Each structure stands twice: as structure tokens, then as C-alpha cells.
Image 1 (cartoon, helix red, strand yellow):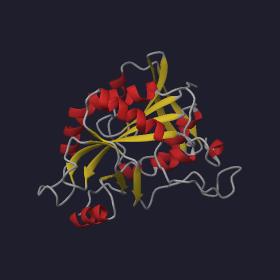
Image 2 (cartoon, one colour):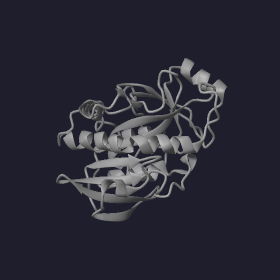
Image 3 (cartoon, helix red, strand yellow):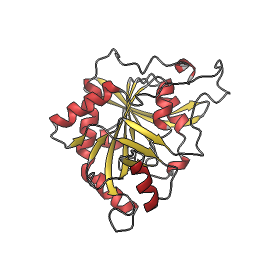
Length: 267
């Protein structure tokens, strides 16, 4: 089985692993939660794993993604740091399409997905409660912001991600309500991914790309086509800052992400 310390999870617009070049290998990683396809790349002397969240042809809907298998697969091959992409809608007019947000908080409104590794069936685990005061890794987020500044890419250094079930888009009333609650952007795939990554002791951060204004803010119906077009225009620069960020991280971790209860039980 291939091994890697660093990983990229590609969302909408980042499904094709060929974005990183030619993989050294691709393998199906089996976990007790299911399997996940992982490709490995040699980049500047480092092995980087790539996992396509929706599959290479974007055939897996947000509510159908096996988030537990994906994160468990990365943990089982030795991954410690993960950067993911997320196409998001804006809950605020000032966050226009094309804005890149390195989110630092979330509101979880998913309701039907398996949302934890510690559901009572985890071998060797009793009751596990994980702290989420700071849901995303501060070290990885800092490197992403540094890389964005070097690339001269306009980026918001913080923001609250609202996670919904999908696959439908939000109503105008929901957009207003989520903004009142403190949300900045809204998407369908960031949760429970961030939760599972923390439970597994992984350093995890998300680069959210605003592809459209939320319902009721633009006056036009929402479509997946505009999401794909917005992601395509920003894809090369976003991918560059993600790689620059994780490759610049020191080998030793100095954040609290690894010091979570039960992380060694996630495989």
C-alpha cells in the first residue's frame, strides 16, 4: 500500500487527479467503512495523495459521499495534513463570486449522514467527545494564507461555513437565516468531512471558492453550470496555493490537531 503524509481532497472542479500530473500509482484503499480510490503523486520530493470527493466524473452527489471511508483511507496510508476544496455559495453580497475564503468556523445543518467515527461500534472505543473550538488546523490555515499572499490571490482570512445536506440549493429564507446566525458561505460537502478529519487526528483546512451568490441575493436562479465555470477559472491558482501551503509545512506538527481522544482507533 502506498504511503503519504500530505493529501488533497478535490471537490467540484477538482475531480480530475490529472490536475497534479501523472500519478505514480492509484489504489483502492479498503476501510471498515468502505473503500476509497487514492492517487499518489511525487511533487518536489514529497508524496502527495489525492482523493476525488465526487469521483473522477463527478458522479457521487454530496449526500452520497462516503466521508468516513475517505477520511479513514487517508488516515490508514499515513496522511497527517489535508487540504480540501469546496465550491460554495455566498450568504453575503460583499463576498462576490470569485472570492476565496479560508474558513475558520462552521455551522453543521447536515442531518442524515454518518457524522462521526465514534458511533458506539468503534472497536476499543467507549464514549468519545472531541473539542471543536477551533475546527480547522491553525498551522495549515496560516500556510494557505501565506501562499495566497505570495500568489497575489485575493483571499478572506476567515469565514463561517454552513454545511447543508443537498443536493438542492438553499431557499432565499434559508440564506437570510444562515447569514443572521453568522454564516458567510454555504456548501454541501464540508461536513462531516471536517469533523471526521479532526476525530482522526488529521490537520485539516478548507479552501472555499465562492461560485455564486446565495438564493435571493442575485435575482437569478442557481445552476450547477455557473458553479463549474467559476471553479474552472480559479482552479490553477487555487491548486497552486494548496500545494505551496502543504509542501511548506514542517515535518513536525505543532498544532493540537493530533492530540484528540480516540484518533488511533480510526482506520
